[in-house]
Picture 1 (cartoon, rainbow, N blue to C red):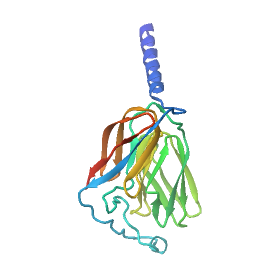
Picture 2: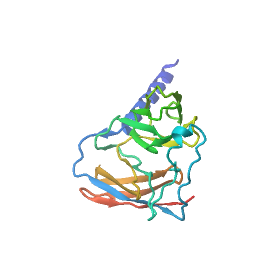
Picture 3: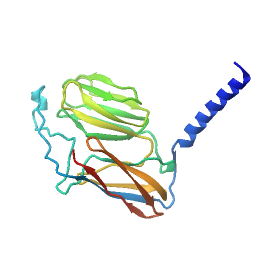
Picture 4: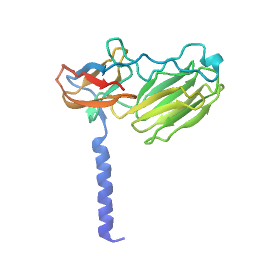
Length: 239
């Protein structure tokens, strides 16, 4: 290989390494941080959650009525299980891998949407005493398709990359949920009334995103004042 080619390749590699380092999140103490709070609402009419048909293992899965959790909306239009996050932020409060837990209880996923930092270990519990199967539809992280028989109470998987991942059970087709792996600590799930709050944010200008498994996503610009609170509300159209 010619010297020029070698030099060019080294420059490209160095640029890639520098670029990765430049965009890596840096966690630490936040001086005079602010917050972002608001509500996510649904625009339009939403029918009540439908009852799921239990077609297998009825002695376990049919003990309680199962409702579809894909779209949960309060009487005031607040959207539950939406994820609000800061899209890109280089520096802020401490952040790193953690341990998250998904429970399979009564043949449903608890929680329906599981949030965790990228690089975390996820414990997947089988509390039902029957065969389940964890199937993830991921692309950045290696996809998983693992049987979890009743004697295997817990399995663990690591998700190194930030990604939105759909999760299903091949043994029980109505079981669906989401893993949300994030690359910074500024993410939160809305409560039953669609409310959310992000805290300890360095003052500055940001882009905030809301994501929902059925209704899609939207973004807004927001300015966080030093020691103050910024208000951001979202409306997602019913589908």
